[in-house]
Image 1 (cartoon, rainbow, N blue to C red):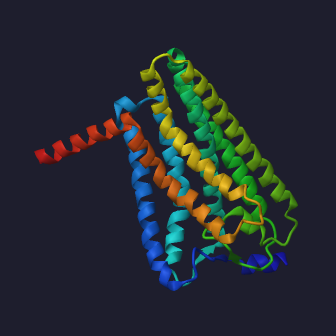
Image 2 (image 1 turned 90 degrees about the horizontal axis):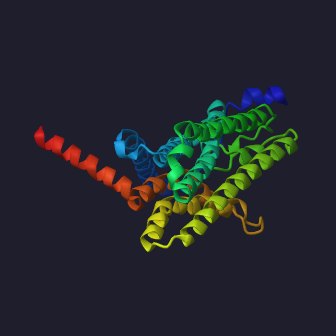
Image 3 (image 1 turned 90 degrees about the vertical axis):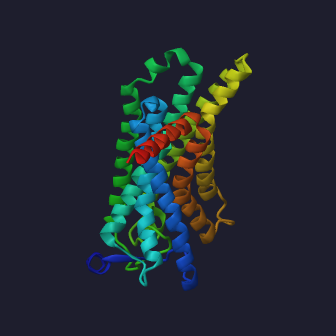
Amino acid sequence: MDTYNLTVLNYFILTGLTDLPELQAPLFGLFFIIYMISVVGNLGLIILTKIDSRLQMPMYFFLRQLSLTDLGYSTAVGPKMLINLVSDEPTISYNWCSVQLTFFSVFITTEVFILSAMAYDRYVAICHPLLYTIIMSQRLCHVLVAIPYLYSKFISLLTVIKIFTSSFCGHHIIRHFYCDSLPLILMLCSDTHEIKLIILIFATFNLISSLMVVSMSYILILVSILRMKSSEGRHKAFSTCGSHLTVIVIFYGTLFFMYAQPKSIHSFETGQIASLFYTLVIPMLNPMIYSLRNQEVKQALNRKWKMCVNILLKL
């Protein structure tokens, strides 16, 4: 059986988003635009927060990391999905499937903890403004990013190795538009109890630990804001948290929609829609949210835009 699987399973067939040929071209156009907006928006934020001297603060360091993770997991899925939409045979090689799952898992897991670090950063900025630069040192910021990356690489490699060293049943049709762990586990012939347990333990830890940090941070922020006597101070505090809070609600709301539904009402179509939302739509929305709601980012964009216009006029 193992020899058979090793020789036959050189590739998988992805069922994709639709089996209706007339919908493939419109869907390709729609998701190509979404993906390109995501790439331009996230790359723009990465570059802007790196080169603008007024954005050299911990908040924008974490925003840069958020854009990097958004770009990472959307690129792990988006290009291959677009190719398969216009391909007669929507396939993915055995090796590339494992690579796609690894990169997607690394970036999506890291994003969960980057969002937690951003919540802690906002807590320090609002509740301890005089100690902000001391507490949120460059060293601490790098540690808060490095640990999630190392942790996510560990659990992603552990999961992928467990899946791809197991025996597949000869079936090579994945009911999804990318290689995800759960559809792959359903295709295994060997005992999947250990793999499922590993995924459940780590997924539960990731969700609960990150939500605890976010919840506690915002509870303390709310208490601190309510104690402020100045309405201007309260408004400023709320505005600094608005963008991050919007991103948090969208991200966790999508995850809860996917995984907290009772199985009786969960369907393949709703799962596909939710997966599309957090793999392609959320990475597109995040740069827009921070660009439109954050005054400092808007001002930095205006400065760079005026600089570019002046340079063009001088040519």
